Picture 1 (cartoon, one colour):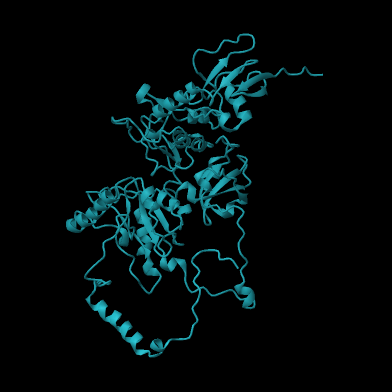
Picture 2 (tube, rainbow over the protein chains, first blue to last red; picture 1 turned 120 degrees about the horizontal axis):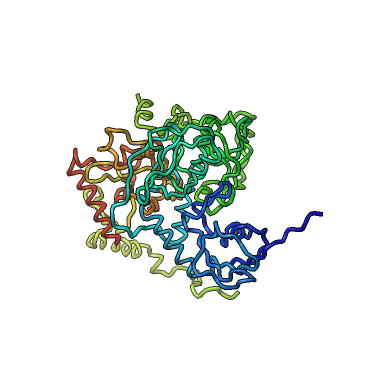
Length: 363
Length: 185
């Protein structure tokens, strides 16, 4: 019989949990779930070597282990610290942690342009959530923020370097998920930026996953750029037969138009399965997909607005009364409204809509 | 039965007295009341010429604001639409192209913007939600009309005049916003 694995008992915020040796504090806290799990901006379970950069997951270790019960002198990054037997961790119960995290959030926002009204990530942005959770939605920084020369990353991926928090997730994705990395971090310190050095587009397969792993709006989908706000699109689980990837995705639809395709994400905002660029960027028709049903959205998320879950539609009685004939509608919505014209298919546009798209329709 | 309140009035159903049966005194006293109103302060005003003052928090028709250079402030962030309890606001956004920098303040702008005044409840939440200082409720009523279409207000109806072309009309519209802000504060 196989040797029974010894489990470490860890206490996170007074809640005990048994985990295997080698687990990080963050993973142990995520096993408990809820508010106990520290936020993570750079750590990604599916990417080897990620974590330890953003410092938002700092926790206090008030007791090192049963063998050595001394507390750790400084706050530690929970994503990179492994648990010990009898370790006691304080996350939200420690004022030191809360204070440090507030500071970290403010530092992350130091050079952030705060252009959420324009950013396509708004509504599903981890930095936005984090800053609102810590009451740091406004900046105290009075000086000029760092800016960068614009880099073009090809027809599918839009880079906004000013929004980047340098979490390195996209670099790990290019290394570990797609073949051949073409981008990386150039320069040092304040000048560090994501770029391809020589203007080179990112076109290896699976590179579109950098969009999903990006915790902020630095890497966004060019095929979705400015098409609509995230919370006005309806997410639904869908799949198709794909020989490159699992083909399981979330479709973001407006009416019948598929505006965006992303991988499915779990409760920690991490991708369940990587999807290929074909599925993400090319197949933008509802007929390409087998739709399984609406995605479960956390009701605290803005994306759940306007989703009338469990709504019962009243029965249409007019056709019954009229002997099976449908009522003749005298008003067509498109005759009074200029918005969402049927002849403008936003989902089919390769990039953002421009004035030409809307003016052409007028003439 | 015990009365629930003390406002109960017992109906007097005695037969009319001789004076009441005479009828004319009551008629004349009534006409006297009507006549006396000729010399009292009028309760009405001559509406189009005279207007009643609005309350400082009055919320009427919306306008879309411009900045001093005449660029549209709205970036189609959708916060007004998401905050709208009546779901009256819809929009479509587009990317600003080279050469349009004088028209739109930011990289993204509202190519189409519509408020359905039939749905709007004039709650002012859009004004509160706007992060770009772009939408305001003015002291104007939505005019009456016969067709539904005239109540769907698009961008041409909502945008205030361009300061580079019509500086006076712009100043008037801006002054309205400024006065409104000060009064509310």
